Image 1 (tube, rainbow, N blue to C red):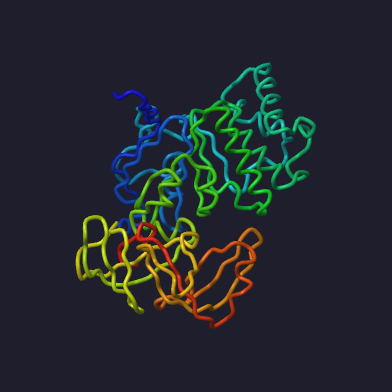
Image 2 (image 1 turned 60 degrees about the horizontal axis):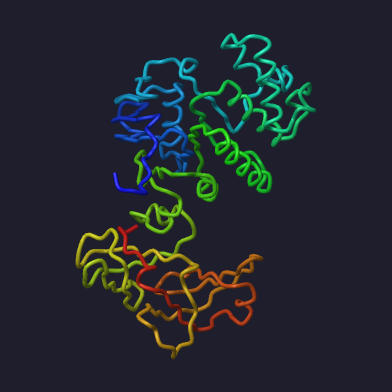
Length: 369
């Protein structure tokens, strides 16, 4: 191995040729091959019905694959009952026992495993300290806020030191500010304890904030699995580009291809140079992806320095505090967004003609939507 190269952690979980159907006809998960490394925080991200939750439930043991095998620490677990898998679970609805105190809820997984009284007390105390709720140990779940209940659910999932923790939309019921606070707390716990976390969400900003890697699901298939920045900067297809972050789409036809770049005639009007990422050849339809923050508004007569330039018409401006958005009509897309510094939108007027500019490297030619 070359000097300076880091050996990736071994796979703790391996999905091999997994398929899942409920009716014998429609596959909810299709030919899934996925390795989850020991100690990583991986998020399964996708819209409703994409297969991400079914994948998590198969790993937990609440669903059985129709085909294929799941390995945990190199042991096949497809037919292993959930309570023998050594997996912690955190759900959106907390699933706490209302008649038990907080301390008793946290202790429950230890009692199921026959842990001794002294060790149970020690572990529960440590878990309460971890979530900073020692003073609330004797309260019941109904006396706690949503955020406090989620902390208890988290402590209960971690108290028996599982080798793997699964989280299914755990912050979905919380308000925005509390959700962002809990995102940081969960990520800090993950880093401090070195646990392996498989996290399911449909919230792409949550996935970008928390994950070491993200597996983007659509229609039962992993479209791309990569680090958050790689998914954002280098999407492999239109679905990933549109699902991860804000994105502008322009449609057109490929006119020429020159190595890694192509020239595209836009459906509205004009031509642009783009990076040829996922196109089928000259004459093929393509969807172009351009991020709002990679676009500038330029004076009509300025030099382009090789950048693409397109005429645009102002539709609207939106002030968002730390930045503003200009909504423009560009080449047939009347919702083309440009990210601006606060105040830069003040001089723009509805119906005004402007020119947008963006580099070929920031324009990705992908499969047609």
